[in-house]
Image 1 (cartoon, rainbow over the protein chains, first blue to last red):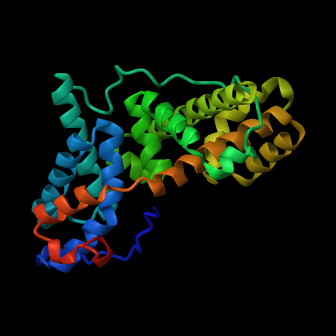
Image 2: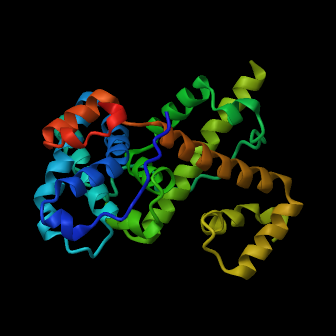
Image 3: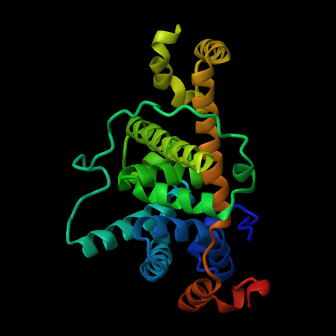
Length: 198
Length: 85
């Protein structure tokens, strides 16, 4: 199923006036990314559904105070990330912010496995087994790396926007992004090495 | 950049992959990659990793029932795209 939604500029003034059509356009444009963000943090459709609804309710309630200093997408994603993180902290019974340095994941990862799998047939078709492996690999990433990778490489935010969503410096985003990309590349290389041997 | 310093590539690879790099550093990196098979493979597979996840995300959409619940919750049912009603 293709998720491509024709993106058009959301009219902030109409939104602030309570225009339901404009709100529907906003929901249509951001519901899939918000769904993916919630799922990547919570890993449960039931939990994600609550967070998605809560995110859009907060958007509706907060739109009057949105001043446009960041993009609308950045603001919506920030609400979604915060809601999902708060939910997961509540479930785990801990209070750790996304920028806390207690998690792992800041160190450098040098490429170890060298195998050119770019032109494998299963890469071109992205078969079910490969998708499963990709899902498992990203789920294994430390949360702080996973969110950065998702916003930048899966949802197309810029480095600056990703930093704004997460309240991080651009330099911290770049560090985490590189590490996430290298870990995922390494995991996929292991997968393809295994599949070629087996 | 010689082959003993391939790890130096990593320091600039982020900016290189994002196209946000000084032209002279870019030229130096591309020259190195042309002559170093391992670095070329790392760069190619990194690019492919990113594009695979990017493409996968486009296919990962909210289930229809969840979308309906959302539109109901937000009192927007009359705006649910027609193909989904």
